[in-house]
Amino acid sequence: MINRYLRTLPPLETLVTFEAVSRHASFTGAASELFITQSAVSKQMRQLEDALGVPLFERKPRGVALTGAGDELLMTVNVLLNTLYQSVTRIRNVHQSNAVSVVATHALAQFWLFPKLIEFNKAYPDIAVHVHAMNEFDEASLNDFDVGILYGTGEWASLSSDFLLPEIVYAVAHPSLPVAGIQTLAQLAQANLVQIDTCAWQCMDWHQWFGHLGMDYIARAKAPVFNQLTLAFRAVQQGMGIGLAWSFMADEALAKGELQRVTGFECRTGNGEFLVSLKHRKRSVCAEVFREWLLGSMGE
Image (tube, rainbow, N blue to C red; front, side, top):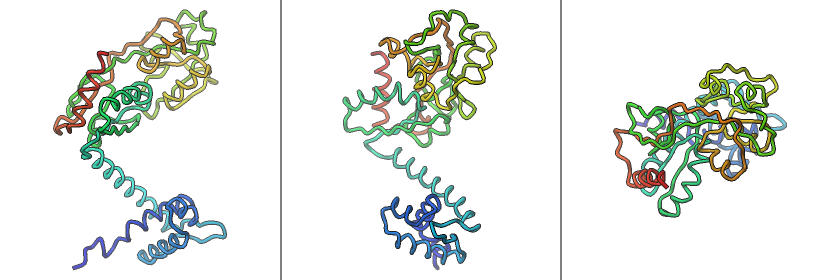
């Protein structure tokens, strides 16, 4: 008896090519991306249309456009390919014997973890560290990684955790900005503050920062806004205004004179960054080496 998948589903390579053609709206563009000929792309798409029994493209003088059936198939293919990609990546990351996979936020990965990885690589050149940076993740995300650096209180039902860093947030500016006259919270609130749009992920913004210090705050209409902490911090470094900075990303720049504190106010939330891993899954040898090294480096 022929397997139902072999009998019904088209070959995976045709679906991958279909996704590329749909994205480029061009057989030629897909061929260039996939490193195959345009005639090979055309042959695969005819094979896919024959397997489904419906046309997926409207051929135009310049490129192609999806038919209604093509649009419907693309929605399904995007979900399936993305799910398959994530599963394959997770299996490869978690089970590769000479590697450790780590998930962390963009800012923490860039400003704090990256310099440590350089030192770790010197100490353990045979262990590959795979870093995945993402801002919105929770304890369930650790199913896909060996370890993670997660923000919170340190209490997660499914995770073991080790404290790394306290959350300390303060205002900073480029040294060229004249901020000496800003002494109070009220004065700071009237200054040009670089805003962080945190509607899509968990991160402190100016409204919350002032709120922790007992003051209401409403952003100015023309204030610069960024949806990533790293972009907002870059704007501050370029002198666009005063921004919020976490101690892990700004302490070194302050010590070097590359930034200046604006007022002595700071917010200590009581939360922090924790090195975490799943309780029910034994850490690999490489993951345990990385964990012990990273925790040991905190005293240096």
